[in-house]
Image 1: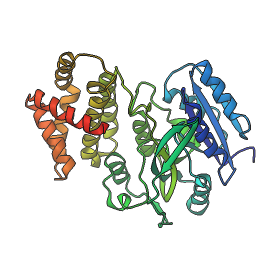
Image 2: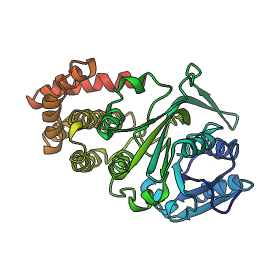
Image 3: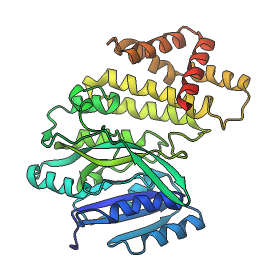
Image 4: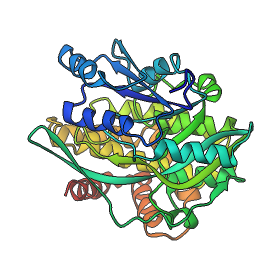
Length: 362
C-alpha cells in the first residue's frame, strides 16, 4: 500500500457490540482493492469496549485508532478527518458494512470519469437485517437487487439531487439498484472539501443530512455510480430506534438548521417540508410513543400539546399545507396530520400518531 492511500475510510465507534464491530472492520479488511487506510475514532466507549476496538484492529493493515471523550458522532468524525492522508474520504458507520468491491468501484469511477472538478461520488446502499447468534453477526442482505446499470451520471441539477435525498421520489433513481442515503455514508468525497466543512456538533440527529447538504452546496461536480457501495444493516440500538428523552429540543434545533440550508436550494421547498414533517413522526416514535418512555400517558399528552403549539412545529405544518400539493398518498396523509394539528384537533392527532408508531413497531 502506498503512503498516500486512495481513500481514507472513517469509522466512528461508541460501545458497538463485538460481533457487529468485527463485521464492520472485516468488510474493510476484505476489500478487493487494498488502496485504503482505516481511521477508527472511539467516541468515549467504556473500558470494555475500548479493549474490543483495539483487539479487533490488530492485524488490519494501515489502521489508526484514536480514543476520545464522548462528544457525539459529529465530533468523532471531525476528529478522524484531522488524521486522514488519503485524497478522498468515505464514511462507514460501525454497525454497517462495505461490499467487497466498494473501494474498487470508487477508484474506477474517479479514474474513468473524475477530474479536478469532481468533489463527490455517490453510490447506492442496500438494506439488510441482522441476527446476533452464538457471538456471530449474521447479516442477510436483500438479494433481489441486480446491478444492471454500469454508466456514471453527472449531476447537472443539485436541486433535483437534494429533492431525491429528502423524499426519494425521482423516478430514475427509485428504479435503480438500492437507494441513496441522505448522510455521508455511500459517498466518496474529496478530502479538502470535507476539511472545510466540519460536522455540526450542536445537532444530535439529522446532523448527517445537514452536513451533506452543506457539502453538496459547496461542491463543483458530483457523480453518481450505479453500483452498490454500502450495506445498511440496522441495529436495534441505533440512534433512529432508541428512546431519546431530549428528542423534542433536538427537533427544534434541526428545524432551525434545515431552514437555513433551505435557502441554498430554492427549488426544494416541498422536499424540506416533507423532511421536517417526517421528523415530527420521528419524535413521536423516539419519545412520545417509545416503549422505554415511562412517563404517564396523561403527562405525555400534555407535553404533546405543548410540542404541537411550538412555533417550530406550527411552521412545519404550515409548510406542509403550502408546499405538499402533489396528490401522493403520503402527501395527503401529511396534510391531514398538519391540518388537524393546525386546527387544534390534538387528541385526534395523538391517536393517529399512536397508531402510526405501533404499526412501525410490527
